[in-house]
Length: 296
Image (cartoon, rainbow, N blue to C red; front, side, top):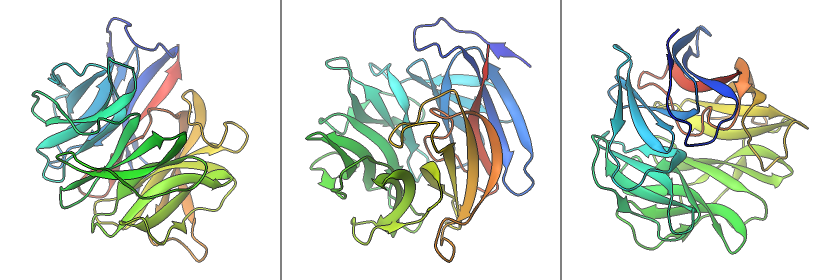
């Protein structure tokens, strides 16, 4: 397979990055490209033609048919992390970027074709994870006054709204396609587990109950299934999701089971941080894009 090389200006994890897709019904995994440094968090574009990922602080577009890779121009924001989300209409991308003044993550908006960024969250740190289906609201994890909670903000900026106020880490907020719910993950019961709440923050409901640390519930476009990543209990602290760990990619029904948390393992690999931080379902609800890693 082809290995793409680039100067090591960012973190070197001592691994190769492998961009893959997985058919969630058949279990077939397909390797698209291998890189000799760190890439993270693929998004699938709404037209099904491209994957969007971050690499060395910049955002790239991978064309699925040809394998061609193009950098998406982002102006002065060149320290983008793995929290980036596409707009419902497929025309824009919101990114989380470590700003130069203090190195903390803030959210910016720019055209998916590239362009000058617009700052959305002056307060930091703010880590983007969700975009409401009506295109009007962003959902993100933010640390305010020493506590990490879920917040929303109008996509054009303005006053942020706090949705959770629970000790521990509350992270990974993502809207369901009908806009009714937000899925998120929280350590409020000890281990990291998946939760769901109303879009206004009311009625939080635990959705997974097993003895793993479960992160980043990604809802399929039809709203029926949720993919997420799991670390074995004891491998990590509940509020940490490091790279270079043996992890599972799991699948569950969005409605949950009798007690919630009924799932099946659809892949096991070396990964973690960067694997599937953001939603990477294909538009046809069948395929997931992700990044696995391999030691050099």
